[in-house]
Amino acid sequence: MENVILIVHLLLALALIGIVLLQRSEGGGLGIGGGGGGTMSGRPPATPMGKMTWLLAIAFICTSLTLTILAAQKSAGSSVLDRIGNRPAAEEPADSAPVLPDSGGGLLPPSGDDSAPLVPRAD
Image 1 (tube, one colour):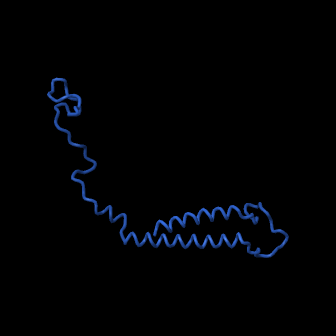
Image 2 (cartoon, rainbow, N blue to C red):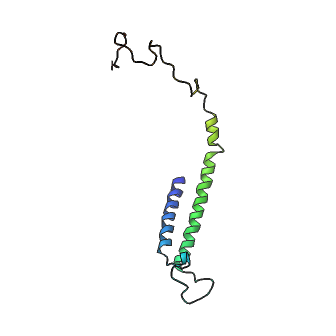
Image 3 (cartoon, rainbow, N blue to C red):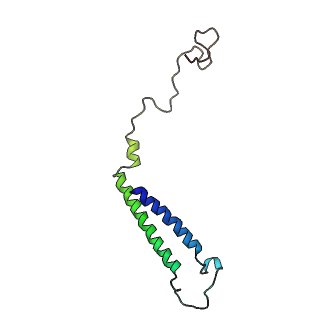
């Protein structure tokens, strides 16, 4: 169900972008554009493209709200912080250095007289 609404939402977004880009400029934006066309009325006549823009915008908002409601129901009141808080504590502190077996020279490589092989083997 959520995937279907998401696909419809994406199609509405693409259609809304397309219909807005196809419309004629009404002017006033950045001081450029088509102008008033001779009439000085406060409200231009509603065009079919304008009505389609409103229809797509309302449908886009409805699918946005539906997806938000579905996501809220799916979360069931859990928080990301709740999931982090339930993590088991580590055995060792993270800032401590790993304990290496005593090889006599600390962090130096083993010498040639040691019984341990110098190269790992794939046995």
